[in-house]
Length: 93
Image 1 (spheres, helix red, strand yellow):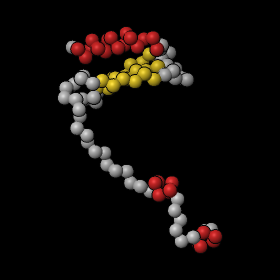
Image 2 (spheres, one colour):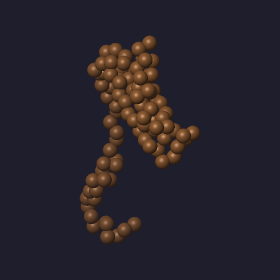
Image 3 (tube, one colour):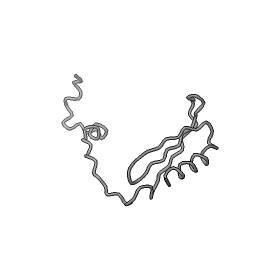
Image 4 (cartoon, one colour):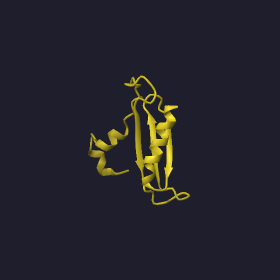
């Protein structure tokens, strides 16, 4: 298609080479925790530019052992303490 490129014997483009790499399969890593709720990851996100029924924030809780995920919607960031308290009470039962 481009006659001037016929003279080039080796066309090495790092981005092209990386784009052709096959993704390696996911290796299962043994969990460092041995019981549910011993390690919980949490993330607070927001504010969203678009609100849905007034909710602009959300918080997630992910159990390291089971990978079970909880998502709570919030209208204000200040709601996090009450959500965290109710979540802790929920997992205790």
